[in-house]
Length: 114
Image 1: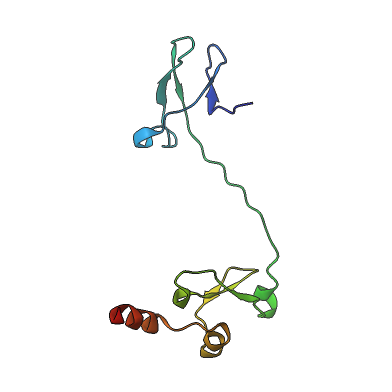
Image 2 (image 1 turned 45 degrees about the vertical axis):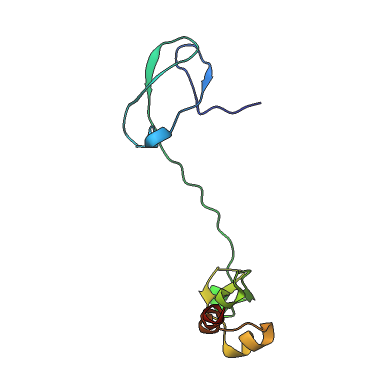
């Protein structure tokens, strides 16, 4: 079953809002629309709903981040990201050696040579 943005208040048929040029996004504004089924005009109001999903982030309590390397191209722009809180940091020299990744500067030097 196809989901529509709203139902016509006159005939109850489902309608999609044409958001071209940002139409229909402004809150607390009466947006005018005409039903393509019954040809009656009506207004609709837009409201945004927020949904929050709490997730444990033990690293914020014990300071032990679980850093994993990002999948970045080119690899020289990779960062380390915590799998629990999404905190990011640059790779250490030791991590660069472990993953066999050069620096951003070395990447740009390679580009200059070609």
